[in-house]
Length: 381
Ligand SMILES: C[S@@+](CC[C@H](N)C(=O)[O-])C[C@H]1O[C@@H](n2cnc3c(N)ncnc32)[C@H](O)[C@@H]1O
Image (cartoon, rainbow, N blue to C red; front, side):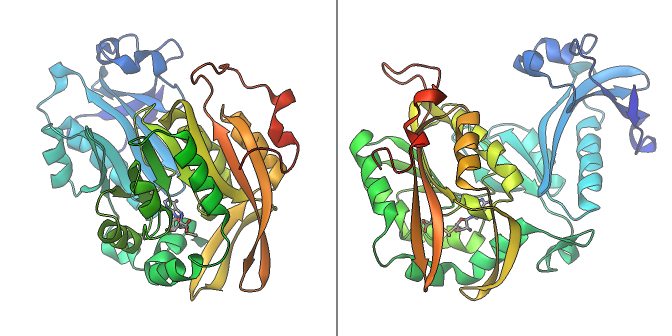
């Protein structure tokens, strides 16, 4: 079925067609590739030029940007500029509403040059891959908070907000009794020295990252460029990525633990389930998630003056969060509601500790009936 016919002139009648339910069939490109068994007909498209299948393209269209998940051109069709043309086509589509385009590319490959020529810049890296992002023309980016079709962009509000208040937040968040302490101690108790820990929303690193990095190999991710710059200075021994935790990619089974302290509530709540599923993928069997989640119903709103900047918050109630954690395939070890005093305002949070099933001696299946988190306040955290 013909799906899109844009830019036909540029590269000889390229159009995109749905992958048939049985897989790519005629497109041999998939036959030689591990993605063959994982093709998702709702996202994958066969690239067709002049009636012939020449490759495959998969794009995730997320509210905060597009991610090119897979782009392959058959060897016989290479050398005709098709790869670049296809990527430009995706960029045109994303830039219209002011969204960036990201992709992952092996660190040692010629494709990297092509993407640089097209305007992609490195925005993160793993041992083997680079995350590259092309942003819409500057005019679009400097409207703050950026609006798409009249709608506020939550990610932009959060990134701009923490760029402005990174140091103030670090100073404010550092005092008083702090449930983070117990949760950091839990990781120190349960994980061997040198374990790989991913910290989502690490901020300036001055709070938990510095402590974690004394014992573990820490990777910190934050959407605020200024926070990441400060974190690199504050904790030189850790690795930092400037990225959105909802779209960042890590290979499966990369981490022994993932922490997300006071971070998930800045993500639109429709993305919380997807993030938890990603986390479950990034964890090794037996790996731990330690996270602060919301404990009340907040569909998503901007507080105009939060420590001096507009800030976006969005979360589910505690019971929905428990369900989401289990639904991501994690075993809920504890989920404790605690109220934090924010300058005289009591704010309830759900402190979650969960494990990826399948660790040493652990059952692979979760048993929701006997889940200790069903009793409020149960658990070791
Ligand atoms: C309230 S601060 C918490 C910082 C630190 N985790 C702590 O415990 O104090 C939230 C942090 O999450 C980051 N953040 C918010 N949304 C994010 C996203 N989508 N991806 C990555 N980081 C994000 C913010 O930039 C900010 O540094």
